Structures are given as structure tokens and as C-alpha cells.
Image (tube, rainbow, N blue to C red; front, side, top):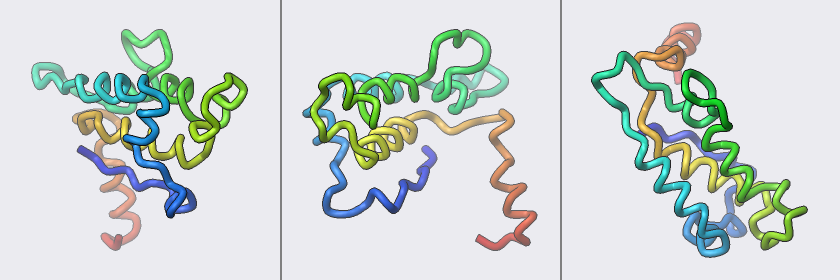
Length: 126
């Protein structure tokens, strides 16, 4: 699994855990399970986690998992009468990264190799 770094501006003592958010909004747990259930089928030529996350590509007419996260946490939920703790940037960041990182890694798609390209341009330095 890839580990996308989280926004350091939302780290600290006020940063909620995913478990705390899921207690406030149980559909987050269901969404995490949905992401964990997505598998990379090795019989297929490729797999792209970003297609599933953003909801583009063949067979994805509706929004991806990201759109579902946005329905449950972040600034937009404040207008829906949700618990105010769900409407913070920190809550969005935690839910976003926890669920996104549950997806399988990309394989043989346009995303693969991009990091290597960046490293090559930097001369191999991280």
C-alpha cells in the first residue's frame, strides 16, 4: 500500500483519529471497507488506484471514492447539519488519507513511473 503523506498543517493535538471520525459518522467505516474490498486483478493489464479514487475511466460514470468522502467530512458537511467536528480540514485530511491509502497500489498505469521521473530530474535525491 502506498502511504500518501498527510498535510502537516492539520497534524497535532486537535487532529482526530479515523476511529473517532467513524464514531461520529459510521458511513466512514463502510467507505473504508469498500476501499479495502477493491482488489487489483492480476489477470487485467493494469490497475489504477486514482481511477477508483477520482472516478474516471471505463465503467466509472459516477464519482469515485473521493466524492463519497466529501459527502461525509470536510467543509461542505457543515451546511448539512453534521457534527461540527466532521467539517474541519483535519477531519477531511484524516478520512481522505486513511481511505485512499487502503486502495491497492497502481500497476502498469500512467501513474506508475511518475515518481521515478521526478527522482531522475532531481538527480536521484529525495
